[in-house]
Image (cartoon, rainbow, N blue to C red; front, side):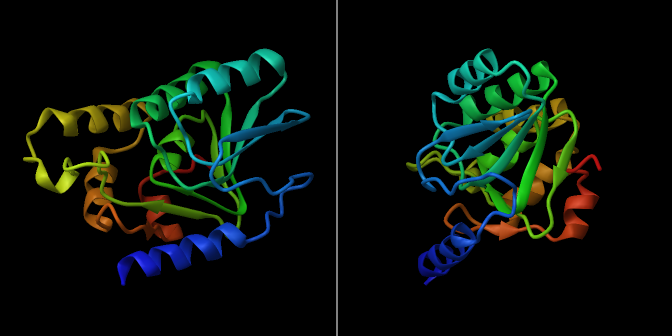
Length: 193
């Protein structure tokens, strides 16, 4: 039943129309970026080519100041996602979750790379415990396992309290998603404004 619930939530969120100006709805799976003026709109699953995709976009559009995350259902390569967030920070880009858009799982981590981070009305921010897609899960590791330190250090580097990592692990198992309330987003200081 949990898979059907997750599918229903993703379907409903994925079908929500973006109210961001000039945005065409793209596939919810394939990573794509559309640039309009100073804004780059990102859609899809974050993959191992993320850093190259972001680098190419900035090289072709040096005027981009803001990365708008429209529909980002997660990541298939967490290391690339963390490196993408670091690149966003080094480039001095801001991140914004589009009104009625969403970021889930690794999408949240990419969002945290922004120098200034904003969330549009009706946007969803979803977290859960991580899994490597096989037998390794966050819940299966001892709390002192060095893998946890990789995540904790990433969040600290992004200016986010360690509490957010442990909250994410407890919020939902890997096969489900927990959507943060506005109060939780504020409490963990995910948005800077």
